[in-house]
Image (cartoon, rainbow, N blue to C red):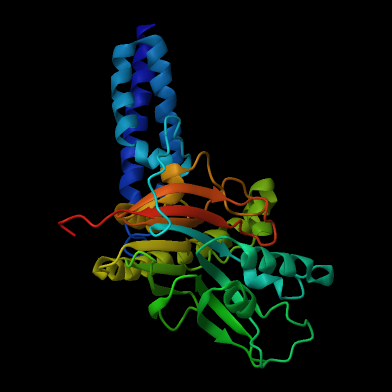
Length: 377
């Protein structure tokens, strides 16, 4: 019995050490030491095992449960990143219309304009645009945006005149940051739509070798406050879902696909770490309350997410329940689409719209209340 207990406690200590190393790996920029990013991906396993040892020792010897229990308490914010739990949360209705903001964020996959994405009668494209246009959201941030201007001839009618439908016709101001305009005049990029006046706007480049970039807009709320909204799309994994599935479905698939997938994963992690460092420097200079909407192309246990979580509240981790997966595909439990808010915001609600299946990403909405400015601000 003593030998078994000693072995179990040794395993507990090793898991605690593993957990601490994994947390340290999350904070290391992949562009300075890329192997750390793979160590960071083991963090949810270490968190789960540590929690299992808490229950094990509570049943066996409560005194020995102190170590994993203390570690679980200290690392609870990291646990919440992947599995949000708020059993005792209560919502106080203290907001007023002048300081409450509803934000919608979605990667719309260029509204399925490409032939391989289309369905009969462009049903998914029409439904997606209509849902966005009719949304009650005050601010809409879209990634992988697509628009056909009025002066562009189109055999698809008005389906892809998305700026007009989501913007002017829906009573919203529009700001489109274009990464590409093709030979026919169609626009690709990211976009912000707002029911509030846009006072100032801008684009943040990630360099000439990528079309991924960021944009921001300063908005004037009815109560007179100015806020800044950032919308960005970080570097893609450049990995096909079918290749990932094949890599773990069989031994031959693993041998054929794994090396290529790892190389692309490594390149993506390095690029995203450089991009997020560029953005964080910009965030730190902003004097307004900030809201962020993003397709991070990264998991909650990554350097990119960690840098944002160090500066902002994540909407889902703060008020959501469960994993909050936003990827609409065969890979489960993937949350790569996120909203964040600076400290002057109270997050009231966050929702993943799994009932909107028109893209490979599910949209998210969140409701924020802007706190009154304190004397020190």
